[in-house]
Length: 92
Image (cartoon, rainbow, N blue to C red; front, side, top):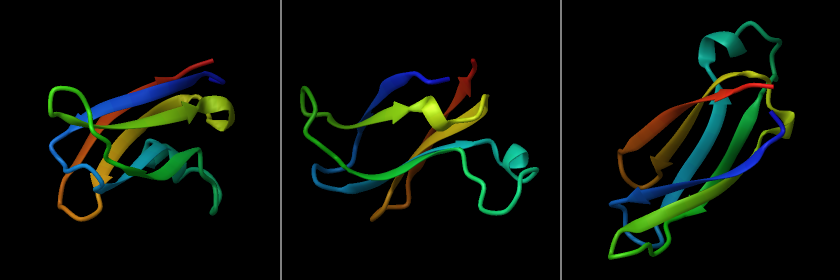
């Protein structure tokens, strides 16, 4: 908790495509809290040229305001029906 790190990913999407990047606490934990509560980060990204013809996305995450718990990191293409995710355990 309180770390700053960069999530780098490769993608088959074309350069310039828009991607929704989200980091959020696992859903069943978030429901225990009051309405309007959110621990995470959301941002629109643009696919950038990567290496060897493989395109990429990159996002810096600052966990300073996150709650300690299991979190999901997702990237969803805005113009295509594709999503991928990883699980991220944030600890003190």
